[in-house]
Amino acid sequence: MTRSQNENNSLITQTYFSQKYRKKRHQNKLYHLFLLIGSLIMLYPLLWMLAASFKLPNNIFNDAGLLSESYTLANYVRGWQGVSDISFAVFYKNSFTISGLSIIGTLLSCSMAAYAFARLNFKFRYVLFAVMLVTMMLPTHVTLIPQYIIFHKLGWVNTFFPLIVPKFTAIDGFFIFLLIQFIRGLPSELDQAATVDGCGPIQIYLRIILPLSVPALATCAIFTFIWTWNDFFSNLLYLNTTSMYTVSLALRAFLDAEGQSLWGPLFSMSLVSLIPVFLIFIFFQKYLIEGITTGGVKG
Image (cartoon, rainbow, N blue to C red; front, side, top):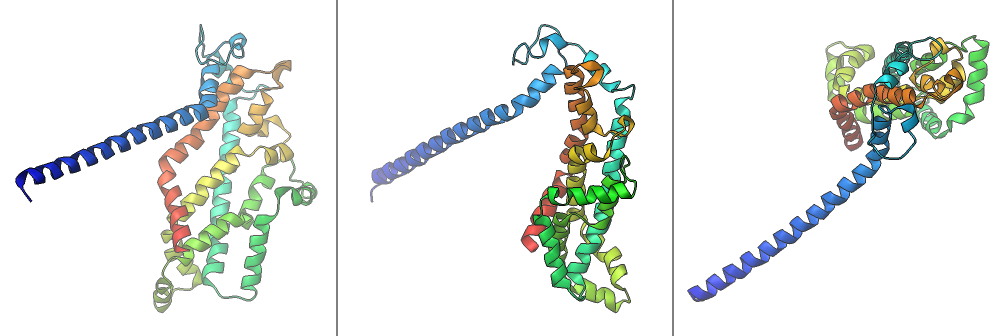
């Protein structure tokens, strides 16, 4: 093959890869443009609510645009004042109290149940595990009335107990299943080595299983916080006094406050209520992803 032929072949190869690169680059641009448009469409309601929280009441529903002739912080001031002379800080405190205690109860009870199913051998182990899986398939409305009757007879209606105490009894089968899958992925040789050193089941659970299960526990904590913080129906069912309202109930109360619907304060406090969920997801998303993927792969 002559030198000119080699040069021609090299030129043809370079032209082919150059065209292929330009085509792929063009496809990537269209792909990213499509994702950008889709993201803007999904974010538009949130952006509209952000803009509406700074608008005057008369301008909120005039148009669907994000811009307005004038803006104000009065909606945030009025919204933080709350409803029925109760500050929104009280509702924030109630939500944090319920969510925090729910996280503690969920992590303690579900981790112990998961450890028992994953590591301990006991009678009716597989039967109880199947029953636990069945509870995941039951709609919430099936047990709603029996639970309410029990809590009513206990005198727990209009208290935080119906929202917190069940979390200490491992009622979340999803978290138990997630932790079981994660714990089964841990080497059983660690338990055997700990047993040789004189550790019992409780010490193995406290000193080995819990420290190694931090990613899965963090995932459970994040989901528990988000679900509890955003819960509306359970709070509506058991909480009757305004001073005991959570954030979700307080937001609903703005629609009936002062004989009118306070849309500006409602939108402003809705954004304020999103801050904890947003921050937790931003700072702990690594544990969230690691807990789910590790439990899924190793299980």
